Image (tube, rainbow, N blue to C red; front, side):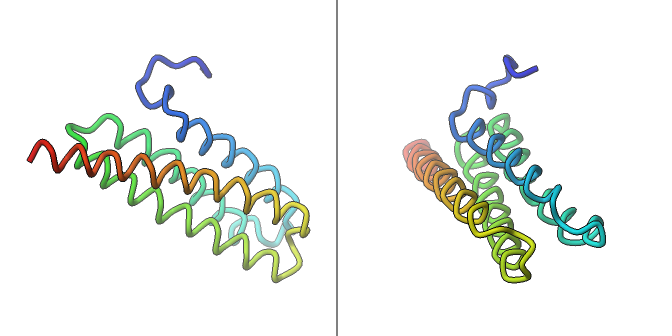
Length: 127
């Protein structure tokens, strides 16, 4: 299914968000079992939300609507960041994993920011 013909599957930022989400799933698998329905689930849901909102937005009419979904995805990305920081402070996330995730999160954030700015500029031109 990796070679989907959907428009979102061709977006570099969507692919980066998927890879980041897979990393989140991998590290949260090592969280304590008592966090299965807490921090693990919340962090994973937020990571999936980033991917899902980019995909949903790409199929909306016009750049303004897509940009709106990118803003939601960005909020979810920041939620993941906050939850990872919290997990690290609780000692559930090893420093090496935290550093790697932070670097990848920053990369997705930059890509999402650039896409959002581009969409907002396109929306202004069509208004």
